[in-house]
Length: 85
Image (cartoon, rainbow, N blue to C red; front, side):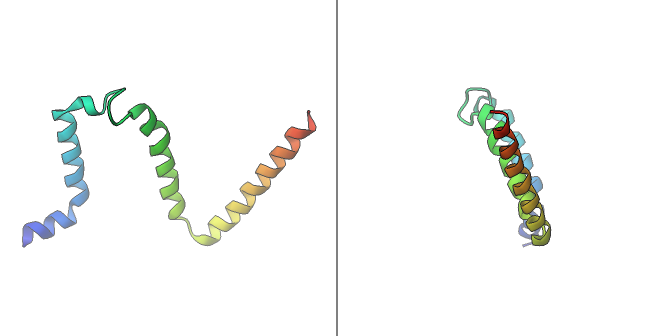
């Protein structure tokens, strides 16, 4: 029972060790052109996931104010870009 409790507590470290061991045993999975397609997953999906995850941890008051400010900047940018056409 203690081993199961310890594994539940250290699940992230165990996952990292297993991922490293898997990469050492079969490196072709993560190579460019391999089944994981790291040229796509790392550059787009991983970055989007990181930003999405950090956005979920924001307080709603902060998120509401930043959303309003970013919408104002976005609309202002579109309006200014149409001036020069």
